[in-house]
Image (cartoon, rainbow, N blue to C red; front, side, top):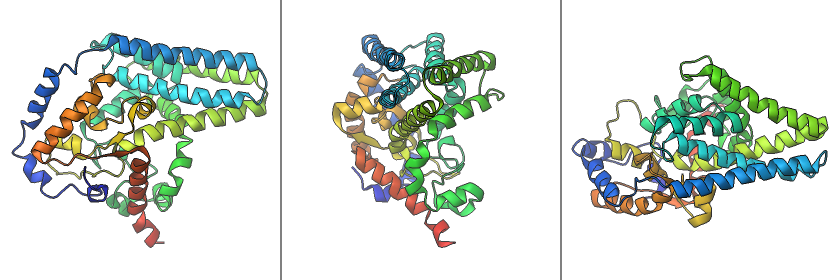
Length: 352
C-alpha cells in the first residue's frame, strides 16, 4: 500500500521513465490471470444476481401500488433508489461484456437495464465510459474529470471560469449535495445525446427513454397526490444519485492526474490512477465489484466474482515490479477523495 497523499496531483517519481522499458509487463500479468481461469463467463452468478435485482424491482413496484397515496411511499423511494443503483451496476457489467461474450445480447441487456428500466442512454454512457477506461484521470481525454462543474487538478482550477470557478472553492463540502442531482443529470444528458454521434440508435434509445419516463411520472402522479409525488421524486432520485456517486467516486478521485504528454504503459496507466476499496462481502455487493477498480481497469470484461482472486495476483505482481498499488477502506477512500477536492480548490479560495 502507498500513502495516498503521495499519489495526488502527480505521478510517483520515476514512474514515467520506468514504464518506457516495461511494455510487456501487462502481457505477463494477463497470462497469469488467464491461466487461473479468471476470464471465463459466470452465467450462474449473473442469473442469480440479476434475478435478485429483478425481484427487488418487482417488489418495489408492488409495494408502491399497494401503499397508494401515503407518506409511507418515502420508504419505498429509499428501497427503489438502491434497486436503481443495482440496475446501473448491471448495465455497467453488460456494457463491458462481463455477462455475455457477444455484442448483441450485451447490447440488448444494456438497453433494457439502462434505457427502459433506469432512464439513462446506454449508448451515450457506454461511449463516455469507454473513453474513461482508455485514459483514466487524463485531464484532456477522460470525460469523468472534465471541469464541467468540479475541478480535479490545480491546473484546472487555475483555468476555471463561471460555475466551476464558483463551485470549486467549496467543492469538497458541496460534493455530496451535488450528487443528489446526479440521477437527473444522467437522464438529462441522455436525452441531450440523442442528437449526437455517441448514440448509434437514437430512435430506439429515445423511444425506450420516453417509455421509461411515461411510466415513471405517470405512476407517480396517478397513485400519489402532487405533493407526495414530488417528495417521492426528490427522495428517490436524490438517494439514487448519492448511491452512484458513492460507488464511482472512490475509484479514481484523489488519485494521480495525468497531463498531456505523459507516457505510461497500459499497466501503469491503469494501476497508478485507480484505487481499490476493501470491506468484504457487503462492500462487494454495495459497489458491485467496482471496489476492485484496479483489476476492473486492467481486465474490463472480467466477471465480477473473479475480481477478488485477480486482486491478490495483481497486487503481488505489482510488488514484483515495484509499481505502487493503492487500496484502502470505504470511508478512507471518501476522505482521500474529499481531501483532494479541497486541496485542488485552494487556489480558488485564495484568489477571492
